[in-house]
Image (cartoon, rainbow, N blue to C red; front, top):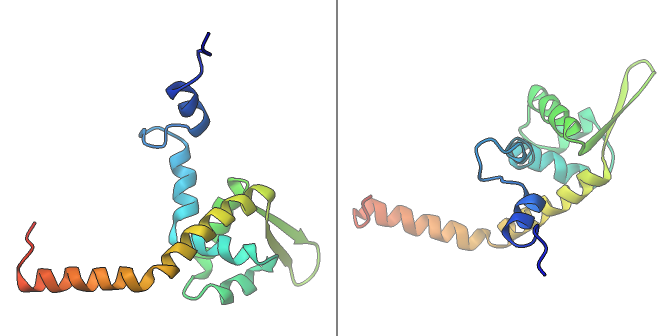
Length: 138
């Protein structure tokens, strides 16, 4: 006798319905896979950082975007913020166990991109050359 929650239904229950417009996992996916979300997760995989150290480590991020990204990742349970009652304020950011898990997944993706970057750039250049010659029109 088969389990009624086996097959496609079980898969949906395990994975959610990220392709569905209303699926709450889309918001989390947006936080994790945003340009700054990826970079914050990668930086925090290396260990605990203060805000200013994270900002220096992640080239090009504004103070506003770093604060916003850290808040989103903290709300999702990926980042832990520890504030120490000292003057001047001292705040540390670190990944939670959940954050470490997603951080490793993001690191795998970024490693793949960096490993394949020459091939990707070549494909982009070939595409641009074809479009420049008028060979490919959409």
